[in-house]
Length: 235
Image (cartoon, rainbow, N blue to C red):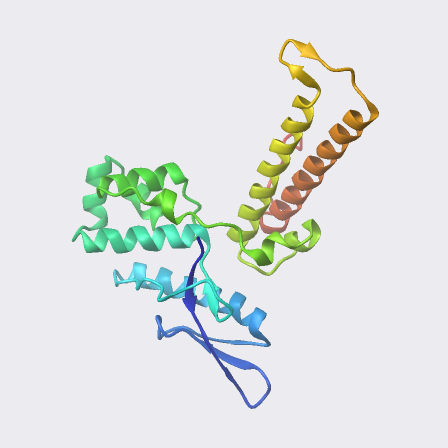
């Protein structure tokens, strides 16, 4: 399920568009076209949400779901904003949530830091401390825009890094499952293996090649955003 904020485009005299968000009046940006507007608006909206959390202000629920004139949130931003709203609705502060979870202050602060990738297990624990169990219902499906991109175009996409990474992880999981299915196709029953055919070998090699391509793309993505990182085996 995609959670998105509505955006409004107004053409400027120079041919670009002024982009605003009715739900977040402080959001203002410019774009060349509608697709560019969605990307730029999402970045501006996430900055606005981060600023509201830093100022301990309310973050409004999006008034519009995914559509052509909307800016979808990354999964992490959506979860953090939802948790922030629920905590404030319960009349709690970060310190109260920390006590309920038995966590330190910095651990709770990271839950609301949009630049920090929190684990789903941490969100589950935090929502559970508020008496909620909502993360399974609000995890996003892949966006059509990213799902349709070839691997190299995906890695170089101007979409949010978290969205691109989530799409790479989704494809990797699908490729792993396909690889398992191909390997299992060699067996009629667990105790009786079929003779390997050319089709079996071609299928195995194809699925392995897909996995390698996705892993290479993931490495390229990490090199793009974390150029100083060291991969296994490098010194």
